[in-house]
Image (cartoon, rainbow, N blue to C red; front, side, top):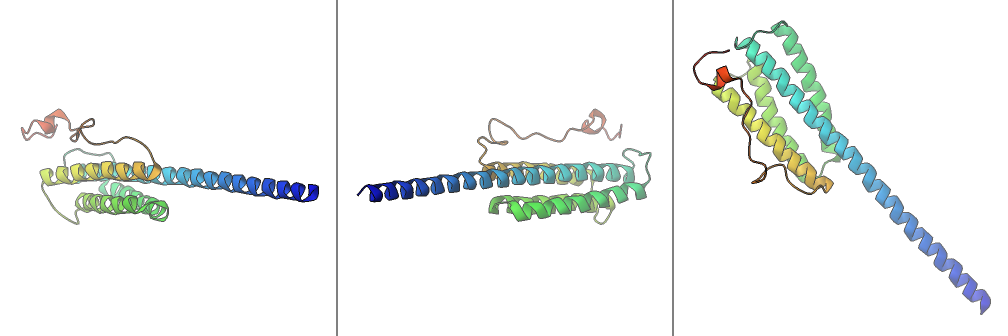
Length: 182
């Protein structure tokens, strides 16, 4: 009877330790993947925003809204490199993201491509259409943020009544509608 009790105690201890160790390992995996996701999501948005900045520089140079010390060719090369880096970051999101994050990334990627195309002259449009493309991209960045926050289990929102939609920050000369370019 004593031997049976010792064996039962040893078996129970072993099973308890196994279950606890397995749970700890699962928590570590979840934390590790959440950290990787956070890095991927943040890196992607960083590359998206950097690409938009490069596209704006090129567009404003091409449309003679603001001169650059760099040539159109140099600006185009920078934009192409930014696009390449954004594509790599996009692939990481595809590998790690949940369904809603992946869909939001696809939508955002499409919006940014439209900005790139108008900046490089592949498509044409008015200044107001250009601004609408940029507004739409920033709305989609917020949608991506929302999906990423849900995927990561972060409480709160970045849009809605507490956080109203904000417009593009434009220099006063261009915002006044007086036709001047600053």
